[in-house]
Image 1 (spheres, helix red, strand yellow):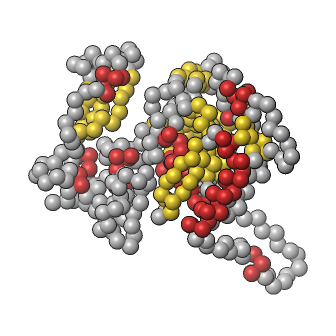
Image 2 (cartoon, rainbow, N blue to C red):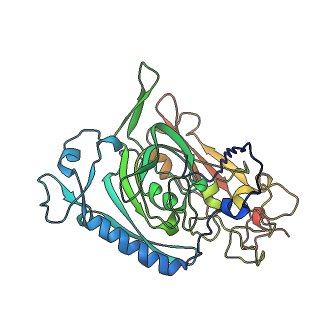
Image 3 (tube, rainbow, N blue to C red):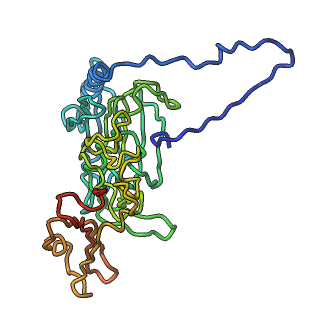
Length: 347
């Protein structure tokens, strides 16, 4: 999928029968001018606002559907002199405006929230999300999409997805259908409108020109917690500076504002020895399971209301096959009581 950070290069070379000197410069890609992020964001936001003000969607139809999907969303341009059709709404009148700092730049993006999603859980920026989606440009040309459920590790996607998808809930329920497909009810449904700085910025990707704002319809189905380095700590808890990104400051590996405790250029979420002391992180923490003496808890709320130690975090609640709930926690031990958890303390 184009929103994933991967490369696929296919070179097709046709050799002429007549030998001639090749013009190397003719085959070189046209260089893209590196633009200032702040200035580009201003231009992108102007373009997004203009788009939102002169496009509308089929609000009445969507409101009347019990379980709308991305295929039901129709966005149309309001041409000059045209009257807004009944049952439709100008996008700018209903989108949510969001602000975020990314790459030292203040960004604005927009969300059309059509359905929050009836499930209890939401993915974090570091989890895997199962969804349907369609990506397109201002002119309506579709550059990517998935009409059957696909799983994405949000860490590997463009920044805008990590800012938007976690604000929605998963489906209320799902059930396998006889033909092998899954029927999802009350999913998280929306459209995101992203500036290029939260997308590919100065890189061109297939049918996406450099510095293009992007639009995605999406339907959030399920979410799965990730522990990328299998160290016992969910990845989202290893975002040390709490900015919703995993960053390493290559210029200063001792910088405590990034997510690399031991300065080995590997962010903690991908490092199974976070403090570099030779002891695996999983051996410097404790885990605990709450199962109500083997009987489980009747409701999820009972697990969420458990009294935890100051250095303990509830990381997962599991619904068992008998309908009861159990909880799992991680305890960040601090053996020498110096205020730094053992897994982050090399001394």
